Image (cartoon, rainbow, N blue to C red; front, side, top):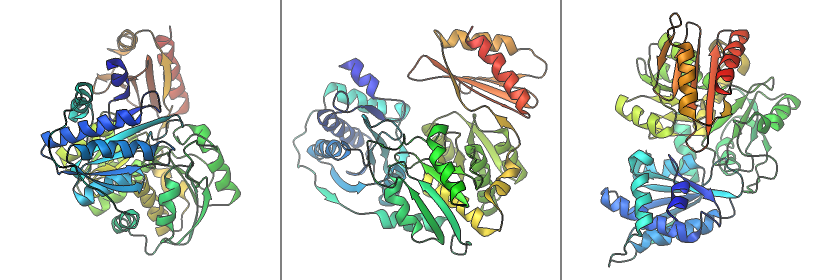
Length: 453
């Protein structure tokens, strides 16, 4: 049982197979443990709970709520929600939250994303390990009154807040294809876009946690194919793809080309620095060098972060950064309680596109200065040994610089690569960037030969 629980509690959230790992009994125990943790942290005595469209989410949320109220906590159920809508509720109400979702994972999975009041993150190093230990111990029921569960619809308040952050009142008419992947964007996008000067062509807006059309994981190029075809077929100005819980957003330009998230990070950084000159912007170490260049060219201060939302959110809080972007399609906003919002990132792209008579590919071209490999996974018997072999290969080569902020990063004059071990599998993840495609491919192949020897 101890091993099973350790497998369910990940670095940033709780996730596992429904029925065998994530069960109502488990979520009841987790609700108790979360309530106990919140009492220990002197947090408010009410929890906001949201849920995605997976068939199991509602029952699991019911059990979690029963566990939390058994320890005297009150609960506000906001019903169907994207993860960023749950963060909005936590921020607006100043309450801790729990979101029932397994994000982009296949249908047989479910999970819980937890946060402190005002959407502050909870990860292994910021409370999740304590909650895990409370689940293992079995939280003792105290003799106290049982909490009250109420319901509150916050969808329109969520939309109001988003549209207060990005001015879309005078954008030109746009045609946009949106692929919700049968996930929560099918719930939130209609409420947002009915207020905009946009013709929306919907793909897979039907909420269906079995994901009958494709996985709700737009970082996988295969899952963008339908959107790319629809953008070209309909002569649309832009395509948007969201993951299952709609906290990530990916763009497709008017030519049907997938947009690297680094390009969107650079675009939003450019826009935010116009509003807040001299501010700090966070980017993770897998982002293109063009991101830092854009930040500095526009008078901002760029800070490089490890991969992972808890690191970025903490760095944003410590540095008072206005924005942060990740290669995985997560975008974080100071004005959104430093939480990530796929919808807010999409609205920034639409605002930039709607303000001028230029195509999205033209708008993004100034940020497309390098060639990236994308993430390449390799199975290895020992990640530490493989990384050391790569480091030994490149150490001392000319002006090469090496750092270990997150895995191994090797920097050259016009190129870099990063190797990171997976948290859950015997894999090494390689990302390479260079000024030209030939140089990128040469570096990629050189590193892979060492890793896979």
